[in-house]
Amino acid sequence: MAMRRGPPLPPGRGASRPATSKSYERSPQTISPSNRTNPASPLHPVSELQRLEFRPEHLDEGVRQCRELWEILRRKKGCVLHRLFHAQADRLSWLAYSEWNSLAELAGARRELARSPLYRRFHARLSRASERAYEAFGAVRSSQGSNSAQALVLITFAQAPANGAEAMEFVRQAPGYLSHLMLHEVANQSAVSCLVYFAEAAQAQACAQALAPVAAFEPAAELYLA
Image (cartoon, rainbow, N blue to C red; front, top):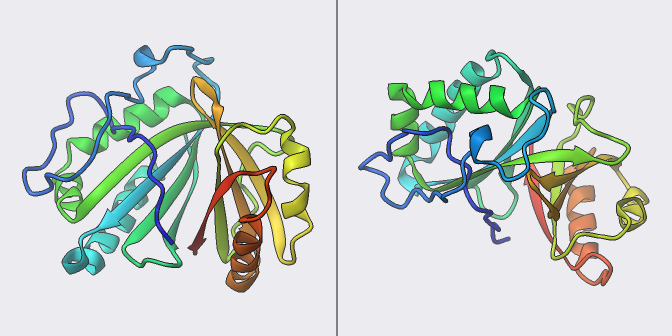
């Protein structure tokens, strides 16, 4: 299943791009609060989705370094949780999801991490990467309690649904469904995604396949495994 990539969200100003990873992609957008067009409260919780695509020859070492980096990040001030998944269709493609107490704390943690030699070695293992910050909306505002999930379906909407609860009713009825989290990009409420957690990989795969003909979604569904 092809990985859909959103515009990257760099780890902080002044971070240099490793010479050994020329295809590492970045966008002008940054997670620095001063660059937001519609800043939220300094204490407003945010989530981050980080898409990673490893070079085939560096997969094992890259994943090891990724886990090591997240052991550092999860101890930073403001980090609430993080989870790491790999794409079912492509072992080279990974997804890191994290929650933070504020955008400022996320930005600060990534700026600090970007100065480390480990960070630079890690990005040399990647062929592509992107990061983007989100805000949760709807009845559920956190993925806490989803640790038992063995699979995740990431739904990216072609256009924001008029009623998120109604749009997700189809998914809530799926076998193995545990919970879901609606997200919109920071400062862009029309860019909507949804994380749907499942007890088992086969159940998540069945849901992802069933989403294709659902016209109300116009979704792109990606399957990731824990």
